[in-house]
Image (tube, rainbow, N blue to C red; front, side):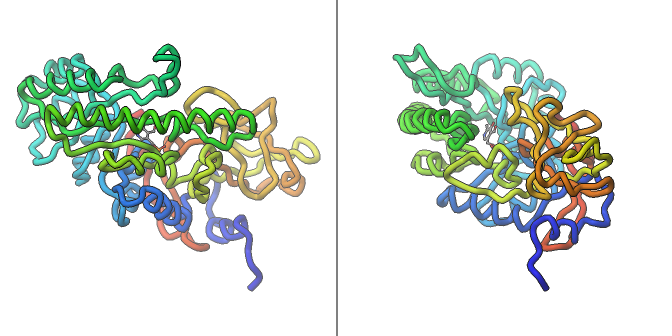
Length: 396
Ligand SMILES: Cc1ncc(COP(=O)(O)O)c(C=O)c1O
């Protein structure tokens, strides 16, 4: 049999399915998972659930060697996953969900989920929402990782936490230990300016700037993280030190102080993750839209497609046509609410009823648009699994 291209392979598997639908290529997902584990260089990989948003695929990752635990994104989601048997949960962001805090306080579990905090106000909020609890609430300190230049007058990085210095982290660690009803479980610092910013953007000048910034950031952060963890461990010997993301596994895992790294997006390999030099994940999560009309030669219009990703609004947040090859969005219309014109060499032969596969710019957000994911292996659909949304869960 003649070799088939990627489009023909997808169509062989999915030609009978009516678009729109979303699909995860399990061969690519597995290869990406292996690559994340390789890049983590022996550190366990905690899966970022926000970047997957599908229980079946979270479990699929957790069953693979090298993965351990979930970094969740809301407390309601955390408790839902806990109720479904996920035992090792680190909520990656502070919560103000009072009802869920009260529910957490009633949980009878040896190792309840760990909450993220960065201030005394978070402790107060937890105490107010859940004054009586069965067990201490386990918390993790989230410290700021941004690159400080010009003696701290310039800061590059996510505006995440007020805890910057080892002394500040130590003071909060002392406050946690001194307060009844809490247990300090860990320290986390997420270097979004390294993990979440591709160092191979289309503009080469920008790329050189990003690489210089990231080199300085990685060196400074390694020193700061070691000092923050040492300061906290002088108060209490916390077992967990988490950091990193899909885009930074090499540099994060190289810091001896880390006990684990986090990754999620690298599994689906959305379009924004084409922009890293250190790794080339295989596009695993796609969605398929039908061509519905041809407004002119060289233009084909698909139904739907307007699923922009979060972050600073810009063209790179729009979905990217993937297969057949040689397609792109138009500058003026982008991705439309109901219709999306598509141009490029590949558009000339498209006719109504043909199908186009696109990639979301980010990972888990795709699952907020589709109730199920079709799982493809080789050229066969092997399963169809619900997304969070498909299970009636819209956490964010
Ligand atoms: C706290 C935290 N850790 C890790 C990550 C990395 O996730 P991913 O690998 O999906 O980029 C993120 C992403 O925003 C995050 O917020």
